[in-house]
Amino acid sequence: MKEQESKMILPSVDSLFTSQEQRDLENAEKVEYIEISKIKDFPNHPFKVINDEKMQDLVSSIKERGVIIPVMVRPKEDGTYEMVSGHRRKMAAQIAGLKDIKCIVKELTDDEATIIMVDSNIQREEVLPSERAYAYKMKFEALKNQGVRNDLTSSPVATKLDTAEMIGKENGESRDQVYRYIRLTELIPEILQMVDDKKIAFRPAVEISYLSEENQYVLLNIMEFNECTPSLAQAIRLKKLEQEGNLTEEKLETIMEQEKPNQKEQIKFGVEKIQDYFPKGYTQEQMENKIKELLEKYKLQWQRKLNERNAR
Image (cartoon, rainbow, N blue to C red; front, side, top):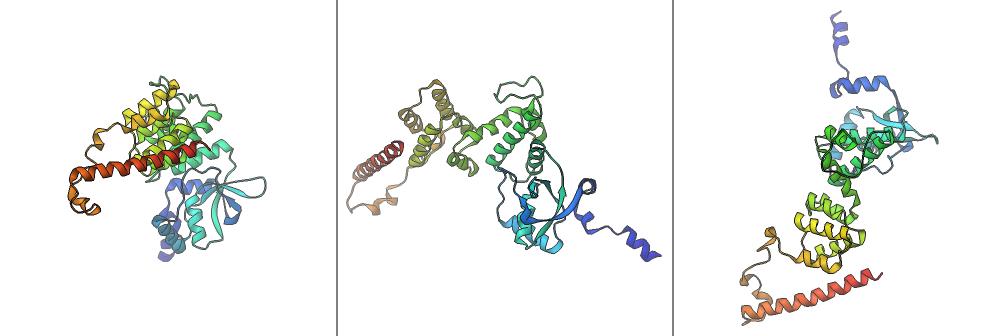
């Protein structure tokens, strides 16, 4: 009798690793094992799924216990399925050698699937600016299609609860911050990558997003050549000139050449660090003149390269 009672109260393995909410969801939906090869990724999935150290930890867990929390998929007309939530678990299962995976199968519209996909990923511990930008934009459009009041034009003050404010409240951000993230999707890929890599600050990047694609590439070349990025004040000036139709390559160069407080003193170094590169007996003035001469040649080469690119 005691043995029977102990069997009745022992929790299942799944109950040890899932919340009550997750167990309720699994019980409420149709759950089945589906061949991984039949599950397609979500179109334009904004969240990167990479085989990093955390992925390997997940792989180890799946090898030991299997996929505990089911992924969510929706059926397609051609007999395949589309992943809604669980891209990382799917990759880990494939690496672990699984042929099929436990799935919650749910009939969803495109907009419903988009909202669930975003909500299930946006709370990750680490979300890149580009991932958050495209996720917010996708959810914004999905909610708009469902009839939620919204306006893609960012205004200084929100007078009513709108789509951006709703998304912000769900993610601990202001309405305007949601709009700023959405603006990042207007950046060229190279500059957006710089934001992800923390090579360019978030707010200047938002202002830069208002530049035309052509001017963004000119700016990119200038940043790479001068090894610098615009301050917020510089980025605001660039945006203003762009909106006025007065932003030229020359003005871009002039603004970016202006010294910023946080960039002062960055290229100063003692003579002892460079004297081995010059003939013995060279004075400091001679070294400076030679450096200027070489930099001038480098600048001409870079300008020639830039002109060739713009002529294509």
